[in-house]
Length: 160
Ligand code: RB5
Image (cartoon, rainbow, N blue to C red):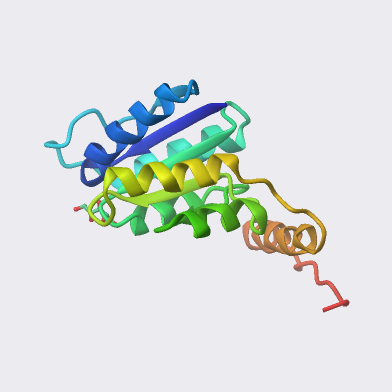
């Protein structure tokens, strides 16, 4: 898979570990930075860059990492078409793909270790969107997003 990964300084160390894991698995990895853990940078810049590249179709999936994973997941989710999921265990990662069709995985570099992160990444990459009723729910997310961006009336679905 083509995977783009990015972090702020708080996620730098885990980004390097995850990147190595991805390379060992044979994935094509694009490192969007940051490139050191000492220089303080702003997580919105990296969350947005990774999410935009995924939504543009330049990469299959994205991984974003900050200290907690919270700020950078919020940033990624500001990009229209991005569905970033902050996961702290493999079950969440698997379900993020299966039910939410997540296209960006967010991790907290100061929250989890590299071993757990590798398991979470594996679950995310091996996950598959289940479709079915989840298509309608993801479509609602999309219509909400489109309505918010354009100011138009939001689509609603009558079947509950
Ligand atoms: C940086 O100190 C830290 O605030 C950032 O990495 C992240 O945890 C924000 O959500």
